[in-house]
Image 1: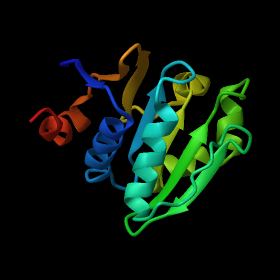
Image 2: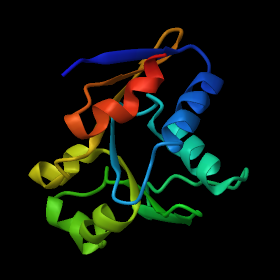
Image 3: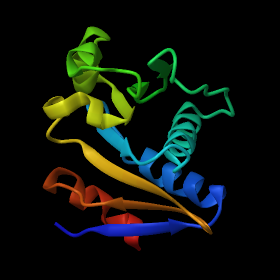
Image 4: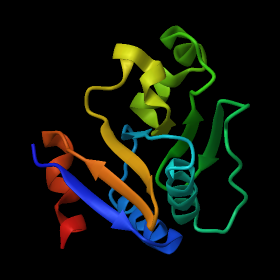
Length: 152
């Protein structure tokens, strides 16, 4: 697997990347968003959701609600923040196992899933830098071909 790191000096760069990702997302896709607080996970998620909904809607952080859902023409989007969970079973009490199969899932703090993260998920690792943010990913075979155009 090839590891790719993209640098985003501006939030608009993150939004552009999110729009590119939105174009290839389909029901059953899960993106695992890892990185420290302030690394850009929520900014990416908001941009994906707004792009797919097609409007500048309010996209609150699901930190306290754990899950926010959004309807799009393509699929329902589940934006999850699992930071407050203490055991992987708690994620599935939310219905996340079904959402993995039928929705587009954006999962912040995916380490809280333990070994229960979908094997076909794409992991994006966000990092805050002095001059912006970076995103690193090593796509599994299911994602590699779909992501080829991002490096053009």
